[in-house]
Image (cartoon, rainbow, N blue to C red):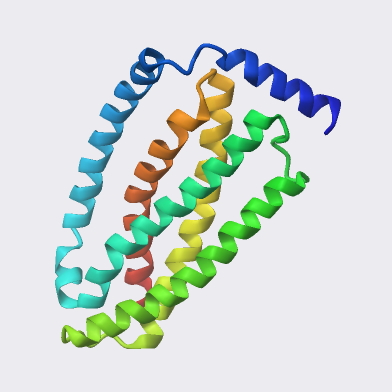
Length: 199
């Protein structure tokens, strides 16, 4: 571990000494969760605008909640890894950092695997429900939107951890709620942007 990394770890430790109390956690999270709840309502409103497309294609109806949930899970994994490295003093925000590159590679690899399987599963369920959307276009929709969403998750997660660290908040408290809520809204938008192009 370099001297700069050790210094960053010591600085983070000093910034958050005494912050792990119920009062500090609640006062940090209540305003944040209130704002994010409003964003969730916006997500529901956005989803409602695509109601006709969803009802016409049952496979897409199956796809939406799983895709959003998967994006949130990927973001949670990345935030947890980056936060742990920050607390240990072994992380630096640099594209040459091997830990960051390994984390990004893991997220992209997970996304590529999961979204292919998700496309096949949603096609099968949609077919059983009487949908006519073929496997090939559904795989294109699922993989394209999934990989775009994975890239967006990486950007949002890294930014959230860095911003939380710079503002003096514990990334363990703030980053996962931010990333999962932001990805809920943008996941719907990315999915239906791809749907509008493919279909």
